[in-house]
Length: 114
Image (cartoon, rainbow, N blue to C red):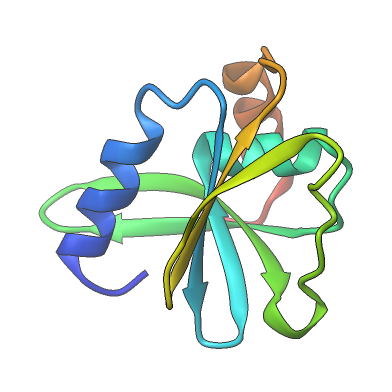
């Protein structure tokens, strides 16, 4: 994640995200943050998780899930509908609501290196 505009876009999308998987193209990987990362993990999509620390006078710790762009195939298709396609981002809508994000994030942050 690079610019404050990108951080703002991610935070705005994820704050009340109840059924969307927002993917952002960063280098050669599709990246999902926070609830979108949780939804991917809940759908058994093989992702690599890491902490993303945003510093702008204070620390914001986001969970980031990464999926290689060249391995991107419609893993999500049985459970989602593609709603947005742009050069650097995708949006899938999920067919069901998945609860438990806060507990999942807390457990992942304990496991991941600081």
